[in-house]
Figure 1 (cartoon, rainbow, N blue to C red):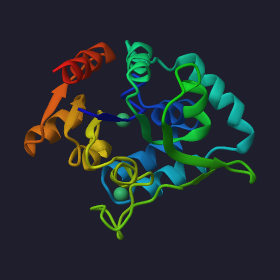
Figure 2 (figure 1 turned 30 degrees about the horizontal axis):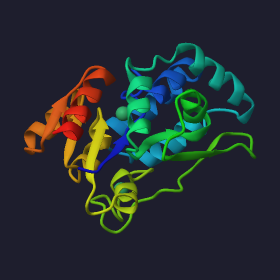
Figure 3 (figure 1 turned 180 degrees about the vertical axis):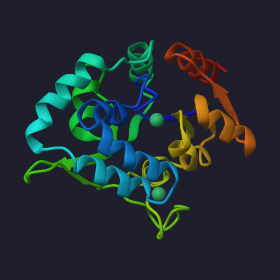
Figure 4 (figure 1 turned 45 degrees about the vertical axis):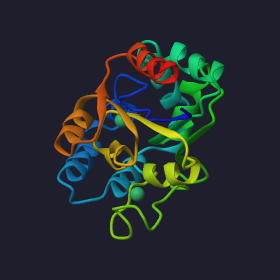
Amino acid sequence: MKPIIFCDFDGTITETDNIVSLMTHFVPEQSEKIAKAMMAQTISFKEGITAMFDLLSTNQKDDIIQYLKETTVIREGFSEFVRYAQEHDIPFYIVSGGVDFFIQPLLERFGPFSGIYCNSADFSGEQITVVYPHSCDEHCAKFPTQSCGCCKPTVMREMAQHDQFKIVIGDSISDFEAAKQADLVLAREQLIDRCKDLHIPYKPFNTFYDCLETVKELIEA
Ligand code: MG
Ligand code: ZN
């Protein structure tokens, strides 16, 4: 058994979604309109994220990081789970639709990870510009008409070897395309319902202590 872990960030490692949290704090009214359009799928996830960060001045960078550092709650057991993976040489990738400038400071004290795949931010202009270095390959269900932004299944195809047992950890619809490629899904919230509907093997979790138990069982089996 050679496990490899692909773990979502917002709503999985953190208890709430950081983009929602920062937008609600800094630009509540304007961002809500965009969020509604994303929910109604009249705009893509990528278009929505681009439009939301365009509401923020590049001068607000430090305030945003500070705000999230003060308010974000890391899910219980995360540091123990990461340590277990490190001690057992289990590759551990963070794959997130969030943005590097807030993910990295929030994860700093837990690493090192095998890799952090997410969107980037460009602060050279007046407004924050989101850059998407990990777009969908031609095998993604969203390719080419829609776009994931940071494409989780594409990252998995790049990083996982055939003999590895792929574990996807996530909470939402944005993890679903990755979950379809997993050997095991550790799921919360909407991702549970999606896995049920499509008969994808999953285990529900509340804290990372639950994830730790599952991975231990797999390794020791
Ligand atoms: Mg999430
Ligand atoms: Zn994609």
